[in-house]
Image 1 (spheres, rainbow, N blue to C red):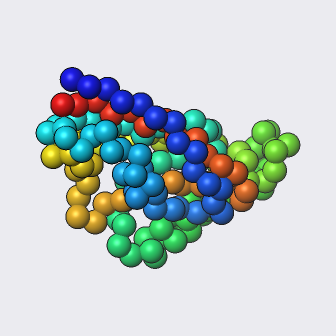
Image 2: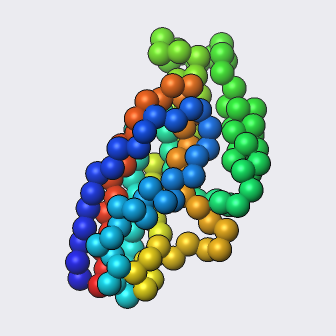
Length: 140
């Protein structure tokens, strides 16, 4: 069994749901000879998250943003943590709802994603800045 780990910094993106599958795959040349394994992608932030979902129709990502903005609105007068901006506390809540990591099987030297699956960076801040990911893969 082999274990590889790499920290990756993603460029800043605007608020929304962004496909990052290719950026992740580009970091995983070490798995090319593996028959099977597991890959964990972990985001080292509390106001952005990761998820897997459809990679074909961009309106899916737009609808995700619409849903989460309705479900977790800004400027809620009951939020106490509001000194970092109106988008900060909602970003923390959205991040917890979505999750900080995804786990994907590795098969025949590639991430074993489904036909229409892609990896999303879910940026919940208006200006979140660069985002750090820690990618850990183990397999043989």
